[in-house]
Image (cartoon, rainbow, N blue to C red):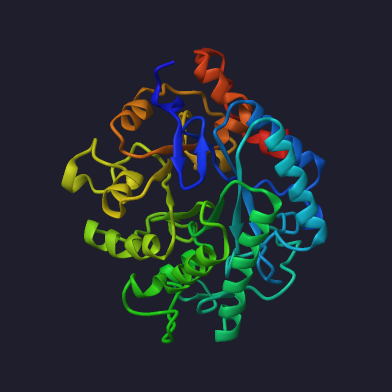
Length: 369
Protein backbone atom coordinates (compact mmCIF):
# COMPACT_ATOMS: atom_id res chain seq x y z
CA UNK A 1 0.00 0.00 0.00
CA UNK A 2 1.59 3.28 -1.14
CA UNK A 3 -1.03 5.62 0.28
CA UNK A 4 0.43 8.36 2.51
CA UNK A 5 -2.31 7.51 4.99
CA UNK A 6 -0.22 4.50 6.01
CA UNK A 7 3.13 6.16 6.56
CA UNK A 8 4.48 6.17 10.11
CA UNK A 9 4.40 9.39 12.09
CA UNK A 10 6.48 10.39 15.12
CA UNK A 11 6.37 13.33 17.54
CA UNK A 12 8.31 13.49 20.82
CA UNK A 13 8.14 9.97 22.26
CA UNK A 14 5.13 8.84 20.24
CA UNK A 15 5.30 6.83 17.02
CA UNK A 16 2.09 5.96 15.16
CA UNK A 17 1.83 3.20 12.54
CA UNK A 18 -0.25 5.40 10.22
CA UNK A 19 -1.70 8.90 9.84
CA UNK A 20 -5.32 8.02 10.70
CA UNK A 21 -6.77 9.48 13.90
CA UNK A 22 -10.15 8.74 15.43
CA UNK A 23 -11.77 12.13 15.88
CA UNK A 24 -13.17 12.91 19.34
CA UNK A 25 -16.94 12.53 19.22
CA UNK A 26 -19.29 13.18 22.14
CA UNK A 27 -21.35 10.03 22.69
CA UNK A 28 -22.94 10.54 26.15
CA UNK A 29 -22.71 6.89 27.20
CA UNK A 30 -21.03 7.29 30.59
CA UNK A 31 -23.83 7.44 33.19
CA UNK A 32 -22.79 9.51 36.18
CA UNK A 33 -19.61 10.40 34.32
CA UNK A 34 -18.09 6.93 34.72
CA UNK A 35 -16.91 5.05 31.59
CA UNK A 36 -17.45 1.31 31.71
CA UNK A 37 -16.78 -1.89 29.80
CA UNK A 38 -18.98 -0.76 26.89
CA UNK A 39 -16.83 2.36 26.43
CA UNK A 40 -13.67 0.27 26.53
CA UNK A 41 -15.03 -2.12 23.90
CA UNK A 42 -16.08 0.79 21.66
CA UNK A 43 -12.55 2.18 21.56
CA UNK A 44 -10.92 -1.27 21.42
CA UNK A 45 -12.76 -2.06 18.18
CA UNK A 46 -11.36 1.07 16.49
CA UNK A 47 -7.85 0.18 17.65
CA UNK A 48 -8.25 -3.38 16.37
CA UNK A 49 -9.58 -1.87 13.15
CA UNK A 50 -6.23 -0.23 12.44
CA UNK A 51 -6.73 3.36 13.59
CA UNK A 52 -3.32 4.91 14.26
CA UNK A 53 -4.35 7.12 17.17
CA UNK A 54 -7.63 7.22 19.07
CA UNK A 55 -8.75 10.52 20.52
CA UNK A 56 -11.48 9.86 23.04
CA UNK A 57 -14.67 11.81 23.31
CA UNK A 58 -14.35 14.92 25.44
CA UNK A 59 -13.91 14.05 29.11
CA UNK A 60 -14.25 16.81 31.68
CA UNK A 61 -11.91 18.21 34.30
CA UNK A 62 -12.61 18.48 38.01
CA UNK A 63 -14.90 21.49 38.07
CA UNK A 64 -18.56 21.15 39.10
CA UNK A 65 -19.65 23.15 36.04
CA UNK A 66 -17.45 21.40 33.47
CA UNK A 67 -20.03 19.08 31.83
CA UNK A 68 -23.23 20.13 30.08
CA UNK A 69 -24.76 16.61 29.98
CA UNK A 70 -25.02 14.00 32.78
CA UNK A 71 -23.53 11.17 30.70
CA UNK A 72 -20.37 12.98 29.60
CA UNK A 73 -17.42 11.04 31.04
CA UNK A 74 -15.38 12.64 33.82
CA UNK A 75 -11.61 12.64 33.96
CA UNK A 76 -11.39 12.86 37.72
CA UNK A 77 -12.49 10.79 40.70
CA UNK A 78 -11.55 7.23 41.56
CA UNK A 79 -14.39 5.50 39.68
CA UNK A 80 -14.08 7.49 36.46
CA UNK A 81 -10.31 7.14 36.32
CA UNK A 82 -10.60 3.41 36.94
CA UNK A 83 -12.96 3.27 33.98
CA UNK A 84 -10.45 5.11 31.81
CA UNK A 85 -7.75 2.69 32.96
CA UNK A 86 -9.88 -0.10 31.53
CA UNK A 87 -10.19 1.81 28.25
CA UNK A 88 -6.41 2.29 28.00
CA UNK A 89 -5.75 -1.38 28.67
CA UNK A 90 -8.32 -2.45 26.07
CA UNK A 91 -6.84 -0.19 23.38
CA UNK A 92 -3.26 -1.17 24.16
CA UNK A 93 -4.29 -4.81 24.17
CA UNK A 94 -5.46 -4.35 20.58
CA UNK A 95 -2.17 -2.71 19.62
CA UNK A 96 -3.51 0.83 19.55
CA UNK A 97 -2.49 4.26 20.81
CA UNK A 98 -4.87 6.55 22.68
CA UNK A 99 -5.24 10.06 24.09
CA UNK A 100 -8.00 11.56 26.21
CA UNK A 101 -9.54 14.77 24.98
CA UNK A 102 -9.54 16.89 28.13
CA UNK A 103 -12.45 19.30 28.22
CA UNK A 104 -14.49 21.94 30.01
CA UNK A 105 -17.71 22.95 28.27
CA UNK A 106 -17.71 26.46 29.75
CA UNK A 107 -20.71 28.76 29.46
CA UNK A 108 -22.55 26.75 26.83
CA UNK A 109 -26.10 25.60 27.36
CA UNK A 110 -27.13 22.20 28.69
CA UNK A 111 -27.57 19.58 25.99
CA UNK A 112 -30.84 18.47 27.61
CA UNK A 113 -33.29 20.96 29.13
CA UNK A 114 -34.66 18.16 31.35
CA UNK A 115 -31.17 17.46 32.73
CA UNK A 116 -29.74 20.78 33.92
CA UNK A 117 -26.08 21.22 34.64
CA UNK A 118 -24.98 20.29 38.17
CA UNK A 119 -23.76 23.82 38.87
CA UNK A 120 -23.99 27.26 37.35
CA UNK A 121 -22.11 27.39 34.03
CA UNK A 122 -18.90 29.39 34.10
CA UNK A 123 -17.03 31.24 31.41
CA UNK A 124 -14.57 34.09 30.95
CA UNK A 125 -17.37 36.67 31.12
CA UNK A 126 -20.47 34.57 31.74
CA UNK A 127 -21.52 34.78 28.09
CA UNK A 128 -22.71 32.02 25.78
CA UNK A 129 -22.21 34.42 22.87
CA UNK A 130 -22.18 38.21 22.47
CA UNK A 131 -25.02 39.80 24.42
CA UNK A 132 -26.37 36.44 25.59
CA UNK A 133 -25.48 35.68 29.22
CA UNK A 134 -25.32 32.11 30.46
CA UNK A 135 -23.93 31.42 33.91
CA UNK A 136 -21.30 33.40 35.74
CA UNK A 137 -18.05 35.16 34.95
CA UNK A 138 -15.13 33.28 36.43
CA UNK A 139 -13.23 34.90 39.27
CA UNK A 140 -9.44 34.97 39.26
CA UNK A 141 -9.57 32.08 41.73
CA UNK A 142 -11.92 30.14 39.43
CA UNK A 143 -9.52 30.59 36.52
CA UNK A 144 -6.53 29.47 38.56
CA UNK A 145 -8.39 26.43 39.87
CA UNK A 146 -9.49 25.51 36.35
CA UNK A 147 -5.96 25.75 34.97
CA UNK A 148 -4.87 23.46 37.81
CA UNK A 149 -7.70 21.04 36.97
CA UNK A 150 -6.52 20.76 33.36
CA UNK A 151 -2.95 20.11 34.48
CA UNK A 152 -4.10 17.55 37.04
CA UNK A 153 -6.05 15.72 34.33
CA UNK A 154 -2.98 15.64 32.11
CA UNK A 155 -0.91 14.15 34.92
CA UNK A 156 -3.59 11.53 35.54
CA UNK A 157 -3.58 10.69 31.82
CA UNK A 158 0.13 10.02 31.97
CA UNK A 159 -0.23 7.94 35.14
CA UNK A 160 -2.96 5.82 33.53
CA UNK A 161 -0.75 5.06 30.54
CA UNK A 162 -2.30 7.21 27.82
CA UNK A 163 0.13 7.77 24.96
CA UNK A 164 -0.54 11.49 24.52
CA UNK A 165 -3.15 14.08 25.57
CA UNK A 166 -5.38 16.53 23.76
CA UNK A 167 -6.90 19.70 25.19
CA UNK A 168 -10.20 20.79 23.63
CA UNK A 169 -9.73 24.42 22.66
CA UNK A 170 -12.34 24.57 19.88
CA UNK A 171 -16.03 24.84 19.02
CA UNK A 172 -17.12 27.43 21.56
CA UNK A 173 -16.21 25.58 24.76
CA UNK A 174 -14.23 27.06 27.63
CA UNK A 175 -10.74 27.46 26.15
CA UNK A 176 -12.28 28.74 22.91
CA UNK A 177 -14.41 31.17 24.91
CA UNK A 178 -11.21 32.75 26.20
CA UNK A 179 -9.91 33.12 22.61
CA UNK A 180 -13.05 34.89 21.33
CA UNK A 181 -13.65 38.57 22.04
CA UNK A 182 -17.38 37.80 21.79
CA UNK A 183 -17.23 35.81 25.03
CA UNK A 184 -14.05 37.12 26.65
CA UNK A 185 -14.55 40.71 27.74
CA UNK A 186 -12.22 40.55 30.72
CA UNK A 187 -9.90 43.40 31.57
CA UNK A 188 -7.46 41.35 33.66
CA UNK A 189 -4.54 39.24 32.45
CA UNK A 190 -6.91 36.60 31.06
CA UNK A 191 -8.48 39.01 28.55
CA UNK A 192 -7.32 41.73 26.20
CA UNK A 193 -7.98 43.53 22.95
CA UNK A 194 -5.82 41.24 20.82
CA UNK A 195 -6.19 37.56 19.97
CA UNK A 196 -2.62 37.04 21.17
CA UNK A 197 -3.52 38.44 24.58
CA UNK A 198 -6.57 36.21 24.78
CA UNK A 199 -4.42 33.09 24.40
CA UNK A 200 -3.28 33.58 28.02
CA UNK A 201 -5.61 30.93 29.49
CA UNK A 202 -4.59 28.31 26.94
CA UNK A 203 -0.90 29.13 27.13
CA UNK A 204 -0.94 28.89 30.92
CA UNK A 205 -2.48 25.41 30.71
CA UNK A 206 0.09 24.37 28.12
CA UNK A 207 3.08 25.77 30.00
CA UNK A 208 2.12 24.16 33.29
CA UNK A 209 1.31 20.86 31.61
CA UNK A 210 4.60 20.79 29.75
CA UNK A 211 6.39 21.24 33.08
CA UNK A 212 4.25 18.59 34.80
CA UNK A 213 4.36 15.66 32.37
CA UNK A 214 7.23 13.64 30.97
CA UNK A 215 9.41 15.12 28.27
CA UNK A 216 8.36 12.40 25.82
CA UNK A 217 4.60 13.00 26.32
CA UNK A 218 3.23 14.95 23.33
CA UNK A 219 0.60 17.63 23.91
CA UNK A 220 -2.12 18.22 21.31
CA UNK A 221 -4.43 21.23 21.26
CA UNK A 222 -7.62 21.31 19.20
CA UNK A 223 -8.60 24.70 17.76
CA UNK A 224 -11.21 25.96 15.31
CA UNK A 225 -12.18 29.13 13.51
CA UNK A 226 -15.92 28.31 13.76
CA UNK A 227 -17.87 27.60 16.90
CA UNK A 228 -21.32 26.32 17.80
CA UNK A 229 -22.49 29.82 18.68
CA UNK A 230 -21.65 31.14 15.20
CA UNK A 231 -20.73 28.76 12.39
CA UNK A 232 -19.41 31.67 10.31
CA UNK A 233 -17.10 33.01 13.04
CA UNK A 234 -13.43 33.46 12.19
CA UNK A 235 -10.97 34.25 14.96
CA UNK A 236 -8.23 34.99 12.42
CA UNK A 237 -9.16 36.61 9.10
CA UNK A 238 -5.61 36.91 7.73
CA UNK A 239 -2.44 34.80 7.91
CA UNK A 240 -0.86 37.42 10.17
CA UNK A 241 -3.75 37.14 12.62
CA UNK A 242 -3.58 33.34 12.43
CA UNK A 243 0.13 33.37 13.23
CA UNK A 244 -0.46 35.76 16.14
CA UNK A 245 -2.95 33.23 17.52
CA UNK A 246 -1.08 29.95 17.07
CA UNK A 247 2.55 30.99 17.63
CA UNK A 248 2.05 31.60 21.40
CA UNK A 249 0.34 28.20 21.70
CA UNK A 250 3.34 26.46 20.19
CA UNK A 251 5.78 28.48 22.28
CA UNK A 252 3.84 27.44 25.38
CA UNK A 253 4.14 23.72 24.65
CA UNK A 254 1.68 22.51 22.01
CA UNK A 255 3.43 19.83 19.94
CA UNK A 256 0.54 19.22 17.54
CA UNK A 257 -2.38 21.48 16.59
CA UNK A 258 -5.64 19.76 15.70
CA UNK A 259 -7.32 22.13 13.27
CA UNK A 260 -11.06 21.58 13.08
CA UNK A 261 -13.08 22.75 10.10
CA UNK A 262 -16.43 21.61 8.79
CA UNK A 263 -15.06 20.38 5.42
CA UNK A 264 -11.35 19.58 5.25
CA UNK A 265 -11.07 20.36 1.53
CA UNK A 266 -12.12 24.01 1.84
CA UNK A 267 -9.30 26.59 1.53
CA UNK A 268 -8.69 28.81 4.54
CA UNK A 269 -7.62 31.89 2.57
CA UNK A 270 -8.84 31.36 -1.03
CA UNK A 271 -8.22 35.02 -1.78
CA UNK A 272 -4.50 34.31 -1.38
CA UNK A 273 -3.94 30.84 -2.84
CA UNK A 274 -7.13 29.98 -4.71
CA UNK A 275 -9.95 27.50 -4.40
CA UNK A 276 -7.47 24.61 -4.15
CA UNK A 277 -5.33 26.40 -1.58
CA UNK A 278 -4.20 25.27 1.84
CA UNK A 279 -6.91 24.31 4.30
CA UNK A 280 -6.94 25.42 7.95
CA UNK A 281 -4.48 22.73 9.05
CA UNK A 282 -2.25 23.52 6.10
CA UNK A 283 -1.98 27.21 6.93
CA UNK A 284 -1.42 26.49 10.63
CA UNK A 285 1.39 24.06 9.79
CA UNK A 286 2.96 26.62 7.45
CA UNK A 287 2.83 29.43 10.01
CA UNK A 288 3.41 27.57 13.28
CA UNK A 289 5.96 25.03 12.09
CA UNK A 290 4.46 22.10 14.00
CA UNK A 291 2.59 19.00 12.83
CA UNK A 292 -1.13 19.42 12.33
CA UNK A 293 -4.20 17.20 12.27
CA UNK A 294 -6.89 18.05 9.73
CA UNK A 295 -10.51 17.04 10.12
CA UNK A 296 -13.92 17.76 8.64
CA UNK A 297 -16.39 15.48 6.81
CA UNK A 298 -13.66 12.99 5.92
CA UNK A 299 -14.75 10.14 3.62
CA UNK A 300 -18.44 11.15 3.65
CA UNK A 301 -20.61 13.13 1.23
CA UNK A 302 -22.13 15.43 3.86
CA UNK A 303 -20.95 17.53 6.79
CA UNK A 304 -22.09 17.30 10.39
CA UNK A 305 -25.18 19.43 9.73
CA UNK A 306 -26.57 16.43 7.85
CA UNK A 307 -26.37 14.50 11.12
CA UNK A 308 -28.76 16.94 12.80
CA UNK A 309 -31.20 16.51 9.91
CA UNK A 310 -31.10 12.72 10.20
CA UNK A 311 -29.67 12.33 6.70
CA UNK A 312 -27.68 9.29 5.62
CA UNK A 313 -24.21 9.85 4.17
CA UNK A 314 -22.38 7.69 1.68
CA UNK A 315 -18.63 6.99 1.50
CA UNK A 316 -16.63 9.17 -0.88
CA UNK A 317 -13.37 8.94 -2.78
CA UNK A 318 -10.16 9.55 -0.81
CA UNK A 319 -8.09 10.88 -3.71
CA UNK A 320 -8.07 14.55 -2.70
CA UNK A 321 -7.20 13.66 0.88
CA UNK A 322 -4.30 11.48 -0.19
CA UNK A 323 -2.98 14.14 -2.58
CA UNK A 324 -2.97 16.74 0.18
CA UNK A 325 -1.20 14.41 2.59
CA UNK A 326 1.28 13.34 -0.07
CA UNK A 327 2.42 16.92 -0.57
CA UNK A 328 2.66 17.47 3.20
CA UNK A 329 -0.16 19.99 3.60
CA UNK A 330 -0.92 18.44 7.00
CA UNK A 331 0.38 15.40 8.85
CA UNK A 332 -2.59 13.46 10.23
CA UNK A 333 -6.26 13.18 9.36
CA UNK A 334 -9.03 12.69 11.90
CA UNK A 335 -11.93 10.49 10.83
CA UNK A 336 -15.20 10.81 12.73
CA UNK A 337 -18.59 9.50 11.63
CA UNK A 338 -17.08 7.11 9.08
CA UNK A 339 -15.42 5.33 12.02
CA UNK A 340 -18.73 5.08 13.84
CA UNK A 341 -20.15 3.29 10.80
CA UNK A 342 -16.98 1.27 10.15
CA UNK A 343 -14.87 0.42 13.22
CA UNK A 344 -12.29 -1.21 10.91
CA UNK A 345 -12.25 1.73 8.46
CA UNK A 346 -8.45 1.99 8.48
CA UNK A 347 -7.88 -1.69 7.75
CA UNK A 348 -10.50 -1.68 5.00
CA UNK A 349 -8.87 1.30 3.28
CA UNK A 350 -5.40 -0.22 3.68
CA UNK A 351 -6.61 -3.48 2.13
CA UNK A 352 -8.31 -1.74 -0.79
CA UNK A 353 -11.84 -2.60 0.35
CA UNK A 354 -13.18 0.93 0.01
CA UNK A 355 -16.17 -0.31 -1.99
CA UNK A 356 -17.27 -2.33 1.05
CA UNK A 357 -17.38 0.64 3.43
CA UNK A 358 -20.77 1.35 4.97
CA UNK A 359 -22.38 4.77 4.86
CA UNK A 360 -23.17 6.68 8.03
CA UNK A 361 -26.70 7.03 9.40
CA UNK A 362 -27.71 9.40 12.18
CA UNK A 363 -29.45 6.62 14.12
CA UNK A 364 -26.04 5.04 14.69
CA UNK A 365 -25.52 7.66 17.40
CA UNK A 366 -28.25 5.96 19.40
CA UNK A 367 -26.03 3.09 20.50
CA UNK A 368 -22.38 2.57 21.35
CA UNK A 369 -21.02 -0.25 19.17
